[in-house]
Image (cartoon, rainbow, N blue to C red; front, top):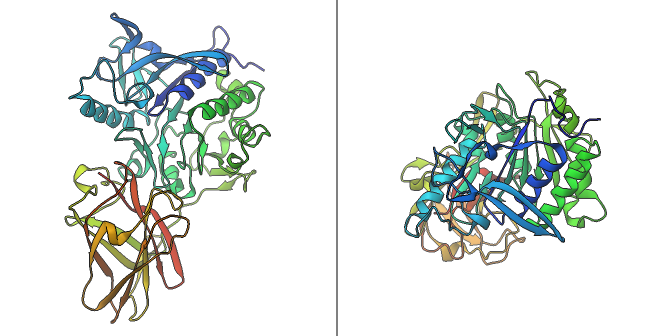
Length: 461
């Protein structure tokens, strides 16, 4: 079995993007190169004449691309990484001044959102591109924070990838074959509708490995991915190598339930030797996409799931959706007026079924910051001044007992039958909330309760 690329075989390339502590991306890239013989995509860029450890992207001259050295468990690792927020995401880099650092990070993160989908490099011009032209990356590693709403966030302000926005704006992966995620929640089941679309283009992404719950911090993540690479080197598939790395006795028990792989059916057997020998099974449309985790070790089909009814935010008359939630004017901050709308409309194929909300039936709306068990005190009365129409009674209560704080929910009871409920909120405070993190809603109508992590999510500005 050929694990390392042999002379005469076509080259393969990888790239790592890190917007948190950089050690895991460095360890992963170093081992991927040494064990499998793949080349770093960034090595096709010209070195900076003034700093040998830096590469120049002529199309994005303020984008930090650094060769880093890290130490882990007594060993030294080194590799070149894309660092849109600087080394260890500290928000500083020699390419930036204090006055333009925020702007340069914003531009770098914006480019990452399209580069991830189709990463390419033109060696002649020493430039990265998001069209997949020139040399392309077969495997992309992303180290970030993540949310169940489909955001991948940096330590500093900004999103490195928003899968809901990408899907709703008709984007798709077009080049990478596997995506490796070192972040929390990015493969939570509520993101699977987006993965279905993003993975099913003309040049489909074969699979994604990552977490459906919490991911460890950078050093432990580096150890996990080192274990993953060891297992790949022994001949295991991407799927089983990831499962084994998180369920091994040496791994913390809480991670055993966090592992997840989403991949096309013909990719579940992918190995490194298949890559190097160009023996990967083709992905032929239509292709089933499967999800593997602790409850589905043999895989279950990923199928589109509709919300049972509608809940959404509106700001300045604009319905906030994944496609537009990243726009600066659609984010939420103190002083804003926003509206939450609840409609008993359920989708069934191409049609919708609408039911009026009956008189006397309570409708509950719970405010959630990032995730249900996040350690931040929620108090809707402290955060908002609420207004409702005269034919609806309004009260607040606590319904999310996984989160600290006071009243986290509104209860709306119409006195007459209505087609929808609208709750208007004036933002008084967003205490301790970080920029770019999501506020989303869980709601109940009668016996129907649903977490609207995707379609009722608004970003803190």
